[in-house]
Length: 402
Image (tube, rainbow, N blue to C red; front, side, top):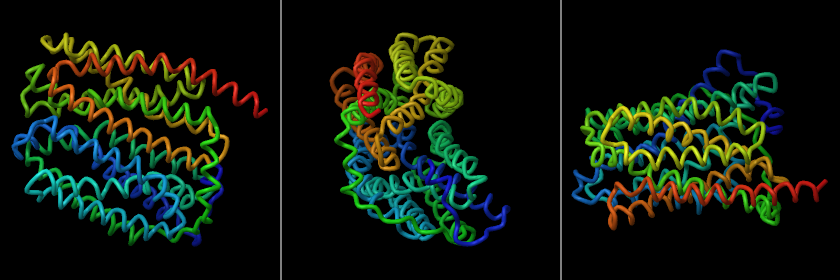
C-alpha cells in the first residue's frame, strides 16, 4: 500500500480530471470483474441455447479460473512496468473483442475462446488498477482513490451478476455479452482521452519476488484461500440453476433473486472488511461457518420461498465477506513483495473457483444440483478445520521473524 500512497503522476492533473479518471477506473473494474462472474447467472439459458448440459457449461467457469491461476502472476510481473494508460486501454479492448466473440459464438468451443482471452488480461488489470488510482490521485487522496476502485470490484461481485442475468432475460445471454463488449469499448475510449500520464513503475525481477514461497505461513494461507473459494464456487457457480430446478423460480425472476443475494453481499463485504482488521483468522473461521450453514440450508428450505430467502441471505452475506477477508489475511502474512502476494491470492482464489465449478459439474452429473449445497458446506468445514493450523503456523513464523 505504501507504493500506492507514495506514487506520483507525471503531469499535474486537475482535481476534476483526476476524480474522473479514478471513476473511470472504478467503472472499468466493474465491467472487467462482471465479465468474469456474469457466466454464473447465464449458465441455464446459455446451456439451453447451445444444447449442452449445465454441468458442461460450467467448464467455462473452470477455464476462466484456471487461466487466471496459471498466467496471472507471471503476466502481471511482466507487464506491470508498462505505460499504464496504454496498458489499460489495451486490456479493455481485449475485453471488448472477447465479449463480442462470446456473444457471436456458434458453439461452446468459440465461447471458450471468448472466455480464455479476457482471463489472461483480468489479473493484470486487478494487479495494477489500485496502484494506478493512487498515482493519479496523489499522496493526499490516494487512499480514497484506491477505495473507489475496490468499490467498482465489489459492485461487480455483488451486483454485476444479477444485472447481467436480468439483461440476459430481457435480451438473451448473447445480448448481455454484446452489452459488456460495448461497455468495455466505451471505457477504453474514455480512458484513452481522460487518463493523465503516469510515472512508470520500476521493473522488479520475478525471481527476487518469488522468494516469498519460502515462507511456509504464506503458502499455508494460499492453500486456505483455495479451499475457501472451492467451497464458495462449488455451489455458487450453479446458483441460478439451483433456483430454477430445485426452488422452482421462474427464469425471468432468477435475476431478482440474485439481486437480493448481491445486496445482502454488500453488507457482508463491509462487515468482512471490519472483522478482518481485528483478527483475520477468527474472521475467516466465522465467515466459513456461516457460509456452510447458508449453503447447506438452501436446498431443504427451497420449498418455502421466505425461508429460502433467509438461507440465501445468510449464504450471500458470508460469501461476499470472504473476499476482503482472504485478501487481507494473505497480504498480512507476506514477509515481502506484498503486491505479488495480493496477485498470487487472486490466482489461488481463481484456482478455487475453477475447482469448485469442476466439482460442482461432476456432482450435478452424479447426484443432481440439489446435492451441491451439502457438498459445498462439507468443503467449507474442511476450511474451518484448517484455520487453527494456519493461524498457529502464521503466528509462529511472525514470532521467529521478530
